Length: 353
Image (tube, helix red, strand yellow):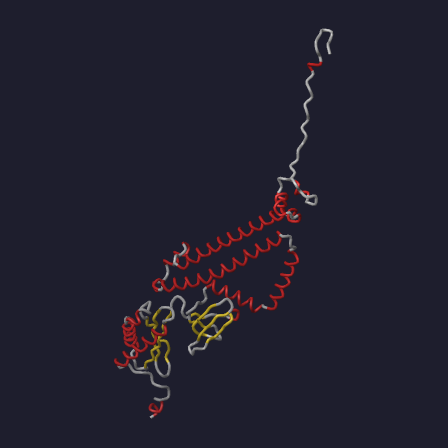
């Protein structure tokens, strides 16, 4: 087309630009009955359907992967938390078992009596046994607690309604609490007994109804063996008082009866010398923590005078030291001619004549 000026107008109009048609990523050869999510080539559903050809699995693939990831995370956190707690408990118990004294307790250790410092090896050994026992109980408790919470979280992740389970557990717990009060009391008493270090294996204790050497300490029952060899099983919840004869140190008490005509001062000096010599013997010296101490006159009766002498010993060794020292004192008094006490009533007829 030419204008009046002779120019071609048609040649100046640019041709129209073709509009691009949108393309969708569709998997080839997708069955008609495939789920809608399987037609998206970049989705997890499509990949699962491509390998398994299972519609229900491909539809649930996103939920399965999400829940599985959460469950794996819960399990990993539970394992790491249990490991960290057990490691901390082991560090605490190993520190106590190696004899390291906390900084807050060092002033008390410096002011402790010399006899207690001499008994440090026995105290460390006892502390080690106590720490191992407490550590075992704490590790078992933390394992049960951490894995129990993790199990409940996993159930909640799978859509399990926890309200009925928790309610049922509460009802069962109340029923068990009413029906097993003695068991719960024994268990709690055993825990506090170990935490407070009331007694341990090898201690000679008096539990009221039974007394003897402790052979085993459990969370529910303590086992004793008395001097006659009888084994006693005492429930921890029934123990109202504990008399421990072998904790820290023991004391051997030697009562020395003499006649009224004996010189108390000379007899006391003689008995103390004999006891001191006996305590230097190798078989006795290893059991003694402090030199003998003469307390003086304990009582005056119609038969004679009773003197008392004490020796501080290692835990549980007081009876052996008592027998050895009593024999040595008796022999020394007999050699010195110290008069023995007169049986009551034997001198009465003579006095009447």
